[in-house]
Length: 231
Image 1 (cartoon, helix red, strand yellow):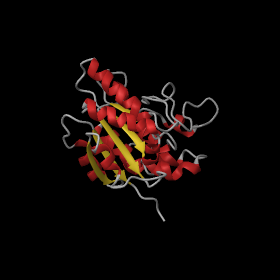
Image 2: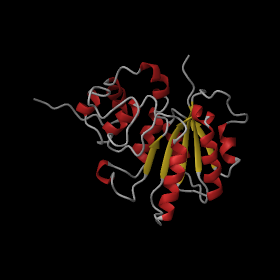
Image 3: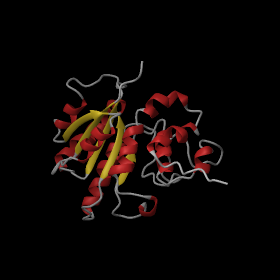
Image 4: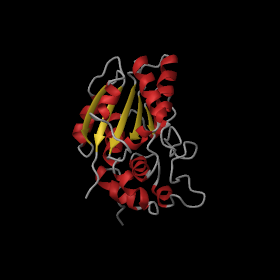
């Protein structure tokens, strides 16, 4: 009798995501985050199930809390969740809801779903690490372009730039869902407040990795991942 290989590769994500049904209204929003999440957990973040409680771990904050299926799938591929938990997502007494709960989901740093809070929490986390003298951990916040309609984000953008939080990275998935858009592009909003701002195709893992890891000394980094809806 042979045992099926564990689902730990990028190619396994569709199968893992396929175990979770019932939130199809957020499918487009969910699919737009898949590559970014994979690149972060596979090649960028210094965190694992074994180090999830280490004070010197990297922090990942999912501000874009709608449609968390790819997030749960990546956590499963990386060993934070098991398949049995994934299969019963959003069911009675399941730790996996339609929005992540930091108390229930292994590896989740924040509870999210109410848009506009993640970047402010990221700024606070980065400041807290600075106050503790911890120079190793980095803070990554994954947002959607629609979240930039929320005013709290612009306070966080301004504060992070002026404070030179170079341990903070904001990844903005741009799938053209913002109400008003940004003349000149989202990057200009961050750059105007002192951030290092870059963009990359949101489906190109190599380009995303390069944008996320190139140096940005002395200031926070914003990476705009461009993902246009199909059709």
